[in-house]
Image 1 (cartoon, one colour):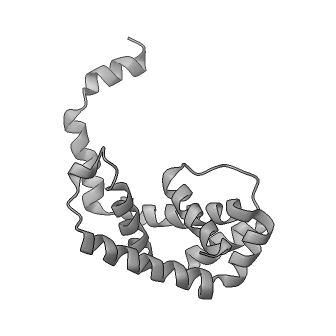
Image 2 (cartoon, helix red, strand yellow):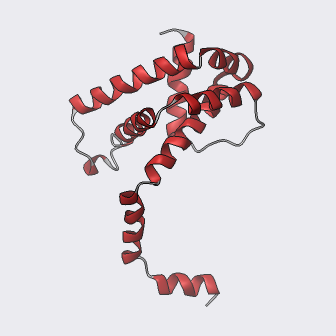
Image 3 (cartoon, helix red, strand yellow):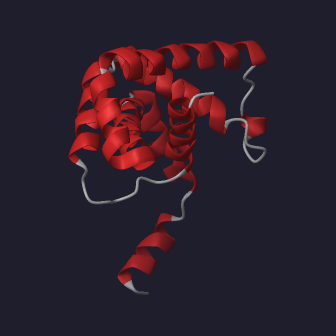
Length: 152
């Protein structure tokens, strides 16, 4: 595995495992962010969300909630690998080189965080996802929350 591929793999792992880090904006990373967001189609963003879902679903604390088969997982990984290859080697190659040169791994992490946030917006904006938030209120003691917030 080449150094650049290792950096990309570690970056993707960090992006999915850690909250966005607030750091001084790096112009090269910002340019890569803009390129990734501009270049990723709605289908591409869905591919990223599907990949993140399959990764998270492997965690023992939530694995019982998902029935992703090995074939499905490999299909998602293949599509995501193809997408990342296109984004980094074709659509945004100059920006990626510059981000790595000036910011190293952090330059990639910030850029992929931006793309991940855009993909998450698509997912969270879906009506069925939105209605699921409303369903949660059926199980919340709203009176207790109101009393706590009012200081009682």
